[in-house]
Image (tube, rainbow, N blue to C red; front, side, top):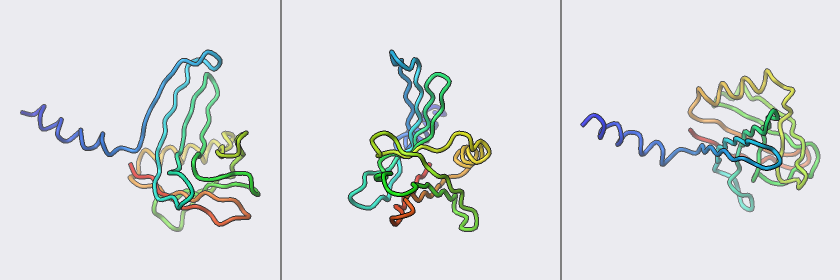
Length: 142
């Protein structure tokens, strides 16, 4: 009976989770691990944006995809965990196809705080934009 009760509690959580994990063996990059948080709340014509954590061998990347083009002036990502007085901002570098923005991995203190807050908080709010265009708002929920 305990197992059935536990199963009934876990299944809804797994079904509603917005986080996904994949691992594959790429012939060029070796073992590639990826964690994706699917966002919602993006406005048309954008897709539902994703926050992606990727490890390829010794290379680690964090980037946003599906939020719009990064080809305009200076793309950025603002992140809040519900406190309007504390918003962390990351300048992004463009992907080759200009459809994803990469966080500078040398900003270790800010990245550590981001990961810590993602693990502790239930809701995160993101604003993606460029300094020449209005930002796109979307939210990720655990």
